[in-house]
Image 1 (cartoon, rainbow, N blue to C red):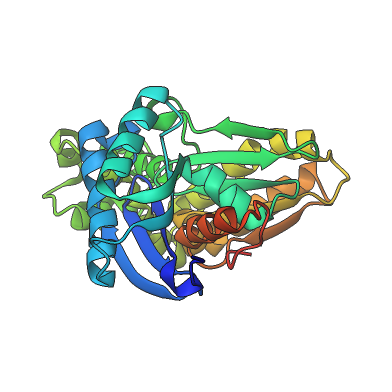
Image 2: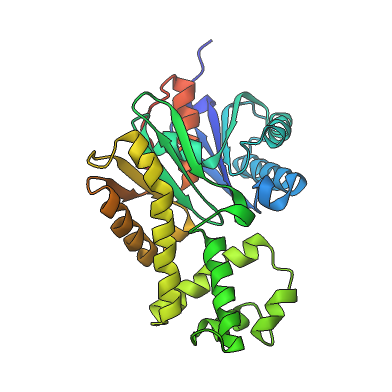
Length: 318
Protein backbone atom coordinates (compact mmCIF):
# COMPACT_ATOMS: atom_id res chain seq x y z
CA UNK A 1 0.00 0.00 0.00
CA UNK A 2 1.49 3.36 -1.02
CA UNK A 3 1.94 6.11 1.54
CA UNK A 4 0.13 9.37 0.82
CA UNK A 5 2.23 12.50 1.17
CA UNK A 6 0.02 13.65 4.03
CA UNK A 7 0.88 10.44 5.89
CA UNK A 8 4.59 11.24 5.90
CA UNK A 9 6.05 13.37 8.66
CA UNK A 10 9.45 15.00 9.02
CA UNK A 11 11.22 16.51 12.02
CA UNK A 12 14.00 19.05 11.56
CA UNK A 13 16.12 20.19 14.52
CA UNK A 14 18.76 22.90 14.83
CA UNK A 15 20.72 23.26 18.05
CA UNK A 16 23.64 25.26 19.37
CA UNK A 17 24.99 27.24 22.28
CA UNK A 18 21.98 29.55 22.52
CA UNK A 19 19.02 27.23 22.06
CA UNK A 20 17.39 24.34 20.20
CA UNK A 21 14.61 24.65 17.62
CA UNK A 22 12.48 21.80 16.26
CA UNK A 23 9.95 22.00 13.42
CA UNK A 24 7.65 19.16 12.38
CA UNK A 25 6.13 19.10 8.89
CA UNK A 26 4.01 16.78 6.77
CA UNK A 27 4.80 15.41 3.32
CA UNK A 28 3.19 18.43 1.63
CA UNK A 29 5.74 20.69 3.33
CA UNK A 30 3.26 22.26 5.76
CA UNK A 31 4.86 23.01 9.14
CA UNK A 32 2.56 21.50 11.76
CA UNK A 33 4.39 22.59 14.89
CA UNK A 34 7.36 24.55 16.19
CA UNK A 35 9.14 24.01 19.50
CA UNK A 36 12.04 25.65 21.33
CA UNK A 37 14.23 24.57 24.25
CA UNK A 38 17.59 25.44 25.81
CA UNK A 39 21.12 25.06 24.36
CA UNK A 40 22.21 21.67 23.02
CA UNK A 41 25.89 22.12 22.20
CA UNK A 42 27.49 19.41 24.39
CA UNK A 43 30.88 21.10 24.29
CA UNK A 44 29.47 24.23 25.92
CA UNK A 45 26.73 22.90 28.24
CA UNK A 46 27.75 19.28 28.80
CA UNK A 47 26.31 16.07 27.39
CA UNK A 48 23.51 15.63 29.95
CA UNK A 49 21.99 19.10 29.46
CA UNK A 50 22.48 18.97 25.69
CA UNK A 51 20.63 15.63 25.56
CA UNK A 52 17.83 16.93 27.79
CA UNK A 53 17.24 20.04 25.66
CA UNK A 54 17.48 18.16 22.35
CA UNK A 55 14.89 15.60 23.39
CA UNK A 56 12.67 18.23 25.03
CA UNK A 57 12.39 20.17 21.76
CA UNK A 58 11.69 16.97 19.80
CA UNK A 59 8.99 15.80 22.23
CA UNK A 60 7.32 19.22 22.32
CA UNK A 61 7.19 19.42 18.52
CA UNK A 62 5.49 16.00 18.37
CA UNK A 63 3.09 16.94 21.17
CA UNK A 64 2.05 20.20 19.54
CA UNK A 65 1.43 18.38 16.24
CA UNK A 66 -0.58 15.65 18.01
CA UNK A 67 1.78 12.97 16.69
CA UNK A 68 3.13 11.41 19.89
CA UNK A 69 2.27 7.90 18.70
CA UNK A 70 3.08 8.43 15.00
CA UNK A 71 6.13 6.92 13.29
CA UNK A 72 7.98 9.72 11.50
CA UNK A 73 9.56 9.25 8.10
CA UNK A 74 12.80 11.17 8.74
CA UNK A 75 14.40 13.02 11.64
CA UNK A 76 17.24 15.34 10.63
CA UNK A 77 19.10 17.13 13.42
CA UNK A 78 22.03 19.51 13.19
CA UNK A 79 23.78 20.27 16.48
CA UNK A 80 26.92 22.26 17.17
CA UNK A 81 29.63 20.19 18.85
CA UNK A 82 28.50 16.70 17.79
CA UNK A 83 31.52 16.02 15.61
CA UNK A 84 33.07 14.35 18.67
CA UNK A 85 32.32 10.61 18.50
CA UNK A 86 31.31 10.23 22.14
CA UNK A 87 28.80 13.06 21.96
CA UNK A 88 27.42 11.92 18.61
CA UNK A 89 26.86 8.34 19.74
CA UNK A 90 25.06 9.29 22.95
CA UNK A 91 22.83 11.98 21.41
CA UNK A 92 21.92 9.86 18.39
CA UNK A 93 20.94 6.96 20.66
CA UNK A 94 18.75 9.26 22.75
CA UNK A 95 17.09 10.73 19.66
CA UNK A 96 16.34 7.31 18.19
CA UNK A 97 14.87 6.07 21.46
CA UNK A 98 12.72 9.16 22.04
CA UNK A 99 11.48 9.84 18.50
CA UNK A 100 10.43 6.72 16.53
CA UNK A 101 11.37 7.27 12.90
CA UNK A 102 12.23 5.20 9.86
CA UNK A 103 15.46 7.15 9.45
CA UNK A 104 17.43 9.45 11.77
CA UNK A 105 20.32 11.69 10.78
CA UNK A 106 22.44 13.59 13.32
CA UNK A 107 25.19 15.88 12.09
CA UNK A 108 26.69 19.24 12.99
CA UNK A 109 24.55 22.34 12.53
CA UNK A 110 27.08 23.68 10.04
CA UNK A 111 27.07 20.66 7.76
CA UNK A 112 23.27 20.56 7.70
CA UNK A 113 23.12 24.26 6.82
CA UNK A 114 25.92 23.81 4.25
CA UNK A 115 23.99 21.09 2.40
CA UNK A 116 20.74 23.01 2.64
CA UNK A 117 22.04 26.41 1.59
CA UNK A 118 24.40 25.35 -1.20
CA UNK A 119 22.28 22.48 -2.60
CA UNK A 120 25.33 20.30 -3.14
CA UNK A 121 27.26 22.98 -5.03
CA UNK A 122 30.77 24.23 -4.07
CA UNK A 123 30.86 27.05 -1.56
CA UNK A 124 31.59 28.21 1.97
CA UNK A 125 29.34 28.63 5.01
CA UNK A 126 30.51 30.87 7.89
CA UNK A 127 28.65 30.68 11.21
CA UNK A 128 28.92 33.26 13.98
CA UNK A 129 26.61 32.73 16.92
CA UNK A 130 27.59 31.81 20.46
CA UNK A 131 30.70 30.32 18.82
CA UNK A 132 32.15 30.49 15.32
CA UNK A 133 33.14 27.99 12.63
CA UNK A 134 33.36 27.76 8.84
CA UNK A 135 32.56 24.84 6.54
CA UNK A 136 33.04 24.35 2.82
CA UNK A 137 32.31 21.94 0.02
CA UNK A 138 34.89 21.88 -2.78
CA UNK A 139 34.34 21.02 -6.43
CA UNK A 140 35.06 17.34 -5.79
CA UNK A 141 32.37 17.21 -3.10
CA UNK A 142 34.87 17.03 -0.24
CA UNK A 143 33.76 18.65 3.02
CA UNK A 144 36.20 21.04 4.73
CA UNK A 145 36.16 23.02 7.98
CA UNK A 146 38.07 25.81 9.68
CA UNK A 147 37.88 26.99 13.29
CA UNK A 148 35.26 25.90 15.77
CA UNK A 149 37.77 25.12 18.52
CA UNK A 150 35.69 26.41 21.40
CA UNK A 151 35.71 29.49 23.61
CA UNK A 152 39.03 28.70 25.31
CA UNK A 153 41.13 28.29 22.15
CA UNK A 154 39.01 29.73 19.34
CA UNK A 155 35.55 31.09 18.47
CA UNK A 156 37.03 34.28 17.01
CA UNK A 157 34.41 36.75 15.87
CA UNK A 158 31.63 35.00 17.76
CA UNK A 159 29.13 36.44 20.22
CA UNK A 160 31.22 34.98 23.03
CA UNK A 161 34.41 36.54 21.67
CA UNK A 162 32.75 39.95 21.31
CA UNK A 163 31.23 39.75 24.80
CA UNK A 164 34.50 38.69 26.41
CA UNK A 165 36.45 41.48 24.72
CA UNK A 166 33.78 44.00 25.75
CA UNK A 167 34.16 42.98 29.39
CA UNK A 168 37.94 43.31 29.07
CA UNK A 169 37.66 46.83 27.67
CA UNK A 170 35.18 47.83 30.38
CA UNK A 171 37.56 46.60 33.08
CA UNK A 172 40.42 48.55 31.51
CA UNK A 173 38.24 51.65 31.47
CA UNK A 174 37.42 51.10 35.14
CA UNK A 175 41.15 50.80 35.95
CA UNK A 176 42.01 53.94 34.01
CA UNK A 177 44.40 52.01 31.75
CA UNK A 178 42.16 52.04 28.72
CA UNK A 179 39.94 54.46 26.79
CA UNK A 180 36.57 55.44 28.19
CA UNK A 181 33.64 53.48 26.81
CA UNK A 182 29.93 53.47 27.55
CA UNK A 183 30.25 49.68 27.65
CA UNK A 184 31.39 50.04 31.25
CA UNK A 185 27.99 51.37 32.25
CA UNK A 186 25.94 49.32 29.79
CA UNK A 187 27.51 45.96 30.70
CA UNK A 188 27.16 46.71 34.41
CA UNK A 189 23.48 47.47 33.92
CA UNK A 190 22.91 44.54 31.58
CA UNK A 191 24.41 42.07 34.03
CA UNK A 192 22.66 43.75 37.00
CA UNK A 193 25.95 44.36 38.82
CA UNK A 194 26.90 47.10 41.24
CA UNK A 195 30.11 47.81 39.34
CA UNK A 196 31.92 46.17 36.46
CA UNK A 197 34.62 44.38 38.56
CA UNK A 198 31.79 42.26 40.00
CA UNK A 199 31.70 40.48 36.62
CA UNK A 200 34.94 38.73 37.57
CA UNK A 201 33.24 36.80 40.39
CA UNK A 202 29.83 36.44 38.68
CA UNK A 203 30.66 32.98 37.25
CA UNK A 204 29.29 33.91 33.85
CA UNK A 205 28.93 30.98 31.47
CA UNK A 206 29.60 31.06 27.72
CA UNK A 207 25.98 31.73 26.83
CA UNK A 208 25.74 34.70 29.24
CA UNK A 209 28.93 36.20 27.86
CA UNK A 210 27.78 35.65 24.26
CA UNK A 211 24.50 37.41 25.07
CA UNK A 212 26.51 40.58 25.79
CA UNK A 213 26.98 40.91 22.03
CA UNK A 214 23.60 42.66 21.91
CA UNK A 215 24.84 45.23 24.46
CA UNK A 216 27.88 45.89 22.28
CA UNK A 217 25.73 46.21 19.15
CA UNK A 218 23.50 48.82 20.82
CA UNK A 219 26.50 50.76 22.11
CA UNK A 220 27.98 50.77 18.61
CA UNK A 221 24.74 52.13 17.16
CA UNK A 222 24.85 54.85 19.82
CA UNK A 223 28.27 55.89 18.55
CA UNK A 224 30.64 54.27 21.08
CA UNK A 225 34.04 53.97 19.44
CA UNK A 226 35.18 50.91 21.38
CA UNK A 227 31.99 49.00 20.59
CA UNK A 228 32.33 49.87 16.91
CA UNK A 229 35.91 48.67 16.90
CA UNK A 230 34.93 45.34 18.48
CA UNK A 231 32.35 44.70 15.75
CA UNK A 232 34.82 45.64 13.03
CA UNK A 233 37.42 43.29 14.54
CA UNK A 234 34.84 40.50 14.68
CA UNK A 235 34.14 40.90 10.97
CA UNK A 236 37.86 40.82 10.20
CA UNK A 237 38.38 37.69 12.33
CA UNK A 238 35.51 35.95 10.55
CA UNK A 239 36.96 36.88 7.16
CA UNK A 240 40.27 35.33 8.24
CA UNK A 241 38.28 32.22 9.23
CA UNK A 242 36.65 32.00 5.81
CA UNK A 243 39.70 32.77 3.66
CA UNK A 244 41.52 29.38 3.88
CA UNK A 245 38.34 27.63 2.72
CA UNK A 246 37.70 30.15 -0.08
CA UNK A 247 41.24 29.44 -1.34
CA UNK A 248 40.64 25.69 -1.31
CA UNK A 249 37.25 25.90 -3.00
CA UNK A 250 38.01 28.34 -5.79
CA UNK A 251 40.97 30.59 -5.19
CA UNK A 252 41.33 34.34 -5.14
CA UNK A 253 39.69 35.19 -8.48
CA UNK A 254 36.92 32.59 -8.53
CA UNK A 255 33.33 33.61 -7.80
CA UNK A 256 32.98 31.36 -4.74
CA UNK A 257 29.62 31.52 -2.94
CA UNK A 258 29.96 32.43 0.74
CA UNK A 259 26.86 32.08 2.95
CA UNK A 260 26.68 33.82 6.35
CA UNK A 261 24.70 32.28 9.22
CA UNK A 262 24.22 32.76 12.95
CA UNK A 263 22.91 35.41 15.30
CA UNK A 264 25.89 37.76 15.05
CA UNK A 265 25.75 38.03 11.26
CA UNK A 266 21.97 38.28 11.31
CA UNK A 267 21.85 41.05 13.93
CA UNK A 268 24.82 43.21 13.00
CA UNK A 269 25.20 45.00 9.69
CA UNK A 270 28.52 46.36 11.00
CA UNK A 271 29.95 42.84 11.35
CA UNK A 272 28.67 41.85 7.90
CA UNK A 273 30.16 44.94 6.27
CA UNK A 274 33.51 44.42 7.97
CA UNK A 275 33.50 40.76 6.94
CA UNK A 276 32.74 41.57 3.30
CA UNK A 277 35.32 44.36 3.15
CA UNK A 278 38.08 42.19 4.61
CA UNK A 279 37.28 39.06 2.61
CA UNK A 280 37.03 40.95 -0.68
CA UNK A 281 40.53 42.33 -0.10
CA UNK A 282 41.73 38.73 -0.33
CA UNK A 283 39.18 37.40 -2.83
CA UNK A 284 37.49 40.15 -4.88
CA UNK A 285 35.36 37.68 -6.80
CA UNK A 286 33.46 36.11 -3.91
CA UNK A 287 29.67 36.18 -3.82
CA UNK A 288 28.49 36.85 -0.25
CA UNK A 289 24.95 36.43 1.03
CA UNK A 290 23.10 36.05 4.31
CA UNK A 291 21.33 32.75 4.97
CA UNK A 292 17.63 33.41 4.49
CA UNK A 293 15.07 31.91 6.80
CA UNK A 294 15.97 29.77 9.83
CA UNK A 295 18.69 27.10 9.98
CA UNK A 296 16.06 24.60 11.15
CA UNK A 297 14.47 24.98 7.70
CA UNK A 298 17.64 23.49 6.22
CA UNK A 299 17.33 20.45 8.49
CA UNK A 300 13.67 20.02 7.63
CA UNK A 301 14.26 20.46 3.90
CA UNK A 302 17.14 17.98 3.99
CA UNK A 303 14.95 15.43 5.77
CA UNK A 304 12.36 15.68 2.99
CA UNK A 305 15.03 15.61 0.28
CA UNK A 306 16.62 12.47 1.73
CA UNK A 307 13.22 10.81 1.89
CA UNK A 308 12.69 11.61 -1.78
CA UNK A 309 16.21 10.51 -2.69
CA UNK A 310 17.22 14.04 -3.70
CA UNK A 311 20.29 14.77 -1.60
CA UNK A 312 21.00 18.04 -3.38
CA UNK A 313 17.49 19.47 -3.31
CA UNK A 314 17.34 23.22 -2.79
CA UNK A 315 15.73 24.42 0.38
CA UNK A 316 13.93 27.59 1.41
CA UNK A 317 17.17 28.66 3.15
CA UNK A 318 18.57 29.99 -0.13
